[in-house]
Image (cartoon, rainbow, N blue to C red; front, side, top):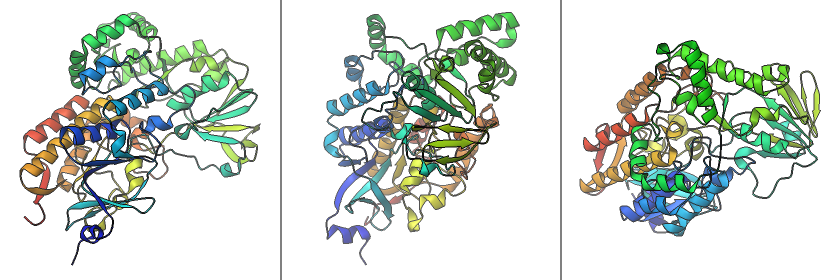
Length: 546
């Protein structure tokens, strides 16, 4: 009896060594590493029209890297690439990130092996042939020994299910699916729903020209001043001259090259601590959290003091006391994603901006040109949904590959997102994830994290081929041990005390599970150790026909 692969070979299946799904930061490097450094025949697929992944879609007003980005939100594998590219600002815009990724695609000739505007609708493992079969939306079939899923940790846009929202006939845009044509806010009544990273970045920009902006706040947020500014020539030269040292420092320090504070809060007076917070606030970026005192995400008393400090800054900034109180977060700072803002709280001092706290005045329904809350009706011409993503696991569930015995990933992950090292799933041979559940992902510099994971995948493939193996996959026991490690690390912190998308709490019905590995440098040490131990925690089977 023929395998599916053998049957398809008699028709029109195109075969590769590896298929990479996704042409964002992880997928682009996976294509380069597997094709140019391992010599494999590789094909990439992406539904977008060009490279960039999430950045291809994130074009909303004010979109920037929401971390201290320049020049560290960038690839590190090529010293020449680092030397030839100059970043213009300390907090990169989405447009500049896209331009950078397009430059990388040109420099390494990546586009010739990527099929754009091509969605993968089905992927299943042919056990007898030991190959992945991939079908695209137009019905074309492909096969490959290895399937690399670089489908994005923040890609599947979440749209809230409010009564009547589909009846709204005005302009409606999700920040994660922003149109490529210009969007005008001039003279329009704009409702912005959501105050996470994209909302906080977009609201000040929208308010500059809109007739009125109504912000529908689901959860108040802490936001720290980005203090974005132009990069100087001297800074660029210094970074380029010390690039290798920065690269190694990023690897050792959880993804960023900055030394964190060694000061201990209990060794300072209350007045000294307040002075330290003021100093870090003036510097901006993440300094308040990482350079004030040791343990801000672990020590509840220290965290409460920093949280109070930021709430005080919000009260100082927002002139209307009632609005300021609505903006007061009541959870531990840092346990939701820290946001770097460029004038967010100042925006509420404008006459054309108002705030509705949905916890006190919830939405009841939408109509063609308005939204009704419990206490009022708000006419709208445009609705901006800054409502986030089904993060980390959503993209893989959307792909829903089928492993051994036809097991769909949605069934495997119905109750828990089990993985080992965040790269492999038991029962899904020769399938690798980049930034999957259980990896550092958003808690590490994502370009560097993707590089290190892809390099490990390359080592695994070389090990498999060098030993006559046909498949590699992890085991349920390794998954359980890995999940226990992730949860144990998280439980030493304040993260689990807050409902956030880190735990899947933003998606109704999603399993409650901490989704990321918080000890990034330790994680990559474990990746290295696993490879050096001939991939302990993984099982191999002989190549078919051997």
